[in-house]
Image (cartoon, rainbow, N blue to C red; front, side, top):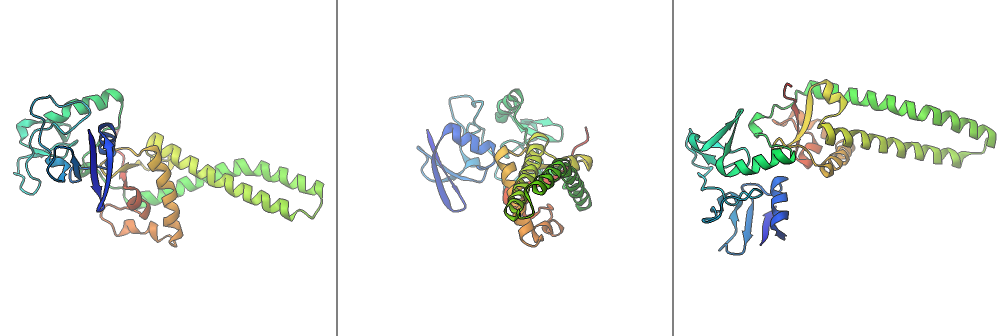
Length: 272
């Protein structure tokens, strides 16, 4: 079976069932995303798909979930499932700390635990990072990177100085080449530093000290590709005369420009 989905007024597809479920897990396709597949009379929101009448819900699919109460007219006692976002009466959901899980999503959640996949969190649980701690974490990471660069470049600079003294004073081309090389190495070091710690620990050492972490808008971890994208997006925050770093002061979710671009949030790390 192939699927089509709409995003930003544009149509995408066809995609296979496996690709469709991957997009759903990554948050590209959400409950309100318009989708269409063979057998549907028109485009519908993903959350409105009816359950399959004969087969039990498959482990890797949410299409077979039971009917959902409309998000526009939800009774006060209904609870939202952390995976599919649908609303159910209290007796039809499983409490999961301060989250809730519906019957149709239990096999999916169990499989995610077995495979060690990042488990989503309810957006209402996200505690956005205080701005002061974000600034402190940024400074700490800058100090750490500065020390790392000193350790790398002081021996290289001494060796370069010795080489130029041996070759004579007319070494402008060699000097420019050395500067370009050191700048390239410095940029690569910064990218490796941020991408590694974001992907491996969801936080740089500076943020770990300040008990902060970076997550997706739904509370899930960032993929490796999104980590690279966020790093390059920080350049845009800097190239806008650092205006991109000021937007957290005016946004209720305290997002910088690169957070808007990559759908990320800086939050307080939960206590261990």
